[in-house]
Image 1 (cartoon, rainbow, N blue to C red):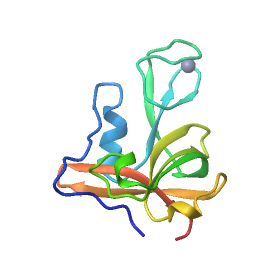
Image 2 (cartoon, helix red, strand yellow):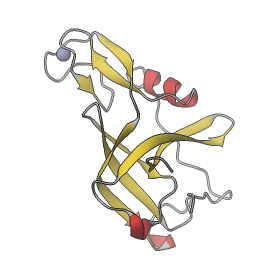
Image 3 (cartoon, protein in one colour):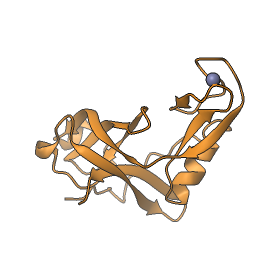
Image 4 (spheres, protein in one colour):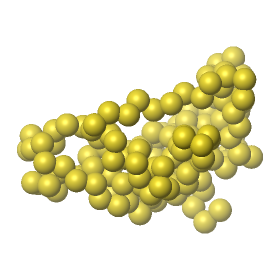
Length: 142
Ligand SMILES: [Zn+2]
């Protein structure tokens, strides 16, 4: 099963600002990039204006392998329990990627009843519209 959208309801879009622009530029190019502090090397997600460890404002974008494991999840089973623009059932997951940060996204290809904490997953990119690509995760090697 693949996540489906209701074409009659607008898809929620990310709010893009100067701090996360690089992340969303990468997504549009089907690349996962993660913010990294240029001074102390801390890998940071969500993107932000300042390193939480050393308070540096010098940041860069580093490519991610895009692999990780499911850290937490929520299954939306009933249509009226989730966002009406997405057809239930679907899963919202927090994935801990190899680089050590956690990313919130949807699962692309896993039945909600098959979702388990610790399941290995990898990034994929869903071109929702001409001007909208969203990062999602799918079972590793699927
Ligand atoms: Zn730092």
